[in-house]
Length: 313
Image (tube, rainbow, N blue to C red; front, side, top):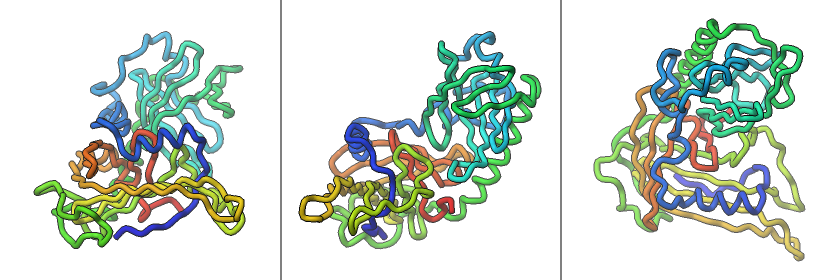
């Protein structure tokens, strides 16, 4: 059941927080970023282009196509716009698949299946590909790149499949949360997350939230956070705590939001591409987001939520 627990995360700017509030109660959003281009085209067959963005001219992508490696990082780019990455650094999501687009200045716009959209500064220097601050060397050609991509994809699919047992689906069951104002408002005959349901915790714009130290300010943990509880009775609670600092009397100043609604699950065709979760808030707003990677990462428009039962340690 739902518990009100304030934990850690990096403090966001006022502008970002305003955006997060719109993500907490989406207005007319029925797909969300989570069901974008990476949601349905990330299979292991490199010849499949269904759902991919419009291919760019070969001359534009050719310098990038191949496998590139440096220390803990491996990046693979395919001609059709797909990409895969392994990152063994502590605090990073170990591997992802997604898409990429080459900008006019050579930088990349990536859309990863777990962590979402990312702008990466890129350039070529002495035969190496510079991605942000990392210099990578080509270790596989364009012809060899599909097999390199498949190695990452198949490993990620197997890993994601292994997590499915933590978060089973089933028919509506169980009792209501005592704080729920409208416990009878559910989708009739819906498939939901059964057992104990699922509690997902935020990372806002960072996937490294679980490595951040507690930020003690006076007697308080200085952070903002968001949580969603997907309960087996077909109801959900979306809760947000926005840290505003400590006032002149030494008291914590926190803005609290709590929204309720009903949800249903359309299970995905595979563990990696994930489920589609449809939300209907009690105030009438609706949204649908993807729960990907073995039901580990719930991608909304701004926030990436992590399944608390299987979060990285």
